[in-house]
Length: 425
Image 1 (cartoon, rainbow, N blue to C red):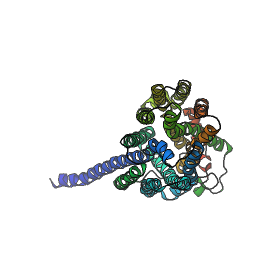
Image 2: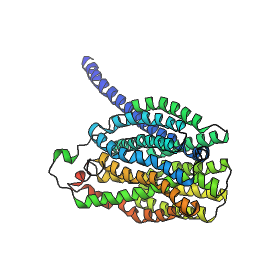
Image 3: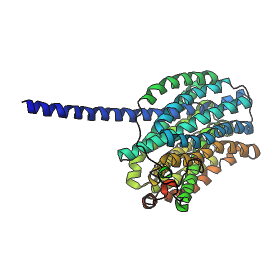
Image 4: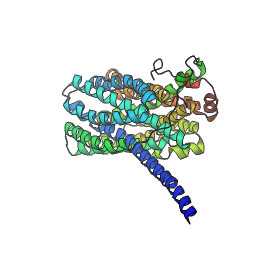
């Protein structure tokens, strides 16, 4: 009996430790889901209020484009810096710092009373969200590799669920006559409180040692560098489409289609809903059909729907077209991020930062470009950029081929492709 008791006492602690580890792992995954959700909800709560902020501050289309450029001015330098810090201290630490800063930054929009103040507030918001994007995506890529299963699209699905929630909050607040500054202050308070438990339960990610630290004299291969450049261009075209619809979809419905405030807000709501549904099912779809087919077919669907929205400026036709645009583009960027993580497995932080910086430069600088074009032609004609970008996305989808991913991952010098300083990592 004593031998059995000793044996039992020896196995119970091991079993208990395993169960505790599994519970912590699940809690960490739920915490990361919450981080993605909060990221989407905070920024999306601003999107439905853009027309009213534009009217309250008496901004022209061109001036609004300048203000929106502030987000790009903040995020573009923050992303490569975040990649370097992630590579040094880990994605969990950067996520824990960036999330509450980002949650607080939305309150700065409530203080803006002119073009300059709005631009500066959006720059701070952009810096915070840029750092958080790099950290949370790297954490998801590391966790996916540790679990040996695909799951990056589901995390982005929670981002889209947050975006849908934020859009609904912003639309409901607009319909109820709530002032934008009141909404921004309340959003900041709620998000800041929610960010604390979400960041606290994050687990340490699978760590990697960049080759630049272990082999300082390793040569940088031109092939992987070119591949990263093309992957960055793919991410750029995808996020430019998403950014244009996010920032100009409601304005197009309100000003060009002359839709009522509730209908114009519904355009972004259905877009965000379609993005969420597409991403939540994206991992299974990519496993069945492959990422190349998903990205290519979705891009063609997006381009066709955008062309319909431009050609038929009827409110509910445009709303339905925005839903198709969202569904078509939903999985593309998560699949790009996952492909980068697989092709550069020993340096995911800098690689993700490089692709994210390029992509989010388009996501954030694209809407000001639309504002510039709209000021010189019309917003309707400026939106022709979306079908063009969809064709670019479809043509570059082959970069996500499994054969190419395996070939790149086998190269011994791949991990040194993205030096933290030289390549904006």
